[in-house]
Each structure stands twice: as structure tokens, then as C-alpha cells.
Image 1: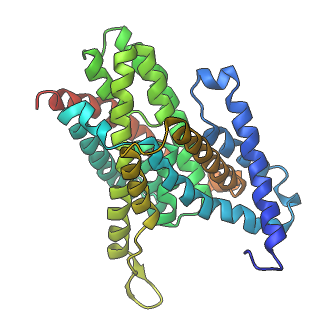
Image 2: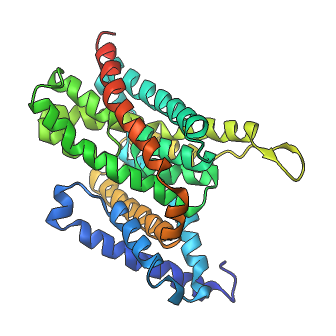
Image 3: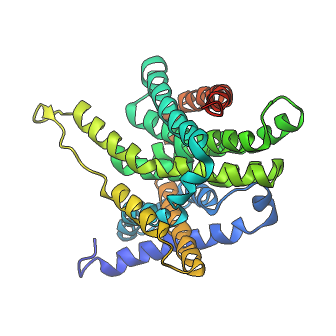
Length: 342
């Protein structure tokens, strides 16, 4: 990929992806996208998909390795740096109720999603896991982090992200509305646990929490960060489980266990960040760089996604995401009600 003959073409492909990421970052500052809490990551994958289905055939084939590099290496780097958004101290701030809610919702949502997707809807394993990861942990970032472990095709990642966009945005408006109407009988802090424990994207959690109130928003973000922290153990368990249950058809033996080391480094970075050794403005700069890297990865994934592949997948991923959305609303509510009694 970076040998002497291909280096310049690969770099050209990476720069091409970077242009899309810059465009997505610029568009994300528009008031309409800020109001809807739509992140550059989401805009990036949309731009990539539009390009893939219009001008993709005009891209020099020599640049393709740069796109692949963005979907693989830059993606892993972005997930590792995502650890700078977290500290272990934040876990203590919400107590046992927030921790119990986060762990229970992530675990049960994945189990329910996998059973419904593979056994009832008869979906393929990779799409099921990606859609379920997006619903159970932290939206698009979780889908991106899970993709290297399941080794799914780019269009499956794009499908999973699209369900995050649909249902995360819906939840962002629906939760505050139902709360104001009196349909969600929770205190402001409990509502924060509910929002942080059940809404998909971090940006959606921030928007929904602030729509209810500052106390709710603070609790919601902390609980959401606990769910984000669960990416690492989730991926480690997933990696071992897939290795145990997957067969190497050629050799008729169980597949080799591959540890997602980027998930381990993600936790190492979070631990380092918990020591508060870096000035806040430096951490802020790192987070900005990280957002750009993830936007590049999303844009590149979009470039590898055609509408024909969406049609091939059909409506089943949306059905699965809908079922999980309803589970998060109703199941999540009762989990929170139980958690606050602990």
C-alpha cells in the first residue's frame, strides 16, 4: 500500500477522503445540523454514499488503497483516541444506578438484537451484530469499532449507521416531548440516566438532555460515557465469541482468536486521560483531531457503499433497529426504575 511505486497514489486517495471529511466538518457547523445534533461523522458517510452512487467510477483505481487505508487504519486510530473523551472518575459520579443501567442495557440489547436478527428475521450475522452494536452502545462510533472485529463489508456498516441516524434522531426529539407531556414519570436525574442509557449517539444524548434541563443533561452524558467505555470489553468478548463460533471452512477448524488490540489501547488511553496529566486545551485538540479521523473513516466507508447493496439488504435491518428502539424505550424505562431502587 505504501511501497515506493504506490505511495503517491495511496496518499492521493487519503487526501481525497480528507477533502470529504473537511466538507462534512464545515457542513456540521451549519445551524440546521447543529440544531438536529447531526455530527460530522453522519454527514461524512452521507457524502460518501452520494459520491459512491454518482461519480465513484471516475475515481482513479490507483487511489482506492487510500480509501481502504482510511476505513481500516484511520478507523482504528480514531477509536483509540476516542478514549480521551472519557475518565474513570465519571463512573463514580452517577453511582450504582448509572453503572447498573449502562451494563444491563448494553448486555440485554445485544442479546435480544442478536436473537431477533439471526433467529427471527433470518438476517446475516455481520449486519445483525453491527445494527445491534449501534443500538446498544454508542451509535455510529460503536458500529465503526465493531466493523474490524466482525470484518463486515462496508455497505453493512453503512446500513447499521443509517439505523442510528433514523432512530437516534427520533429519540432525541421524542424523549423530551414525552417527558414534558408527563408520560415519563421520572425525576430529572433519573431522566438523565434514562436518556444516557438508551439513546444511540452521544450528540443525541447531549441534545435530548439539554432539552429537559441542565441536571438531566449532566447525568445523561456521564451515563452515556459509561456505555461508551463498554466498547472495549464488548469487543474483546465479541472477538473471542466469534472465534469460538466461527469455522474456518477450508481447514474445518475453529477460527483463530484475534484480539482487537485497538480496543485495549482505547481503555489504556481512557486510563491515561483519567490521570489528568494533559491540559484541557490539549485534550480538546486531540478530540478535534479524533473527530476528523472518524469522519474520514465514515466518509471512506460511504464511498464503498452503493444503493444496490442497500436494496440487497432489504428492510430487515430497519425492522431489527425498530424492535431494539422499542425495547430501549420500554425496557430501558423499567431498568432505570429498578436501578434507582438499588
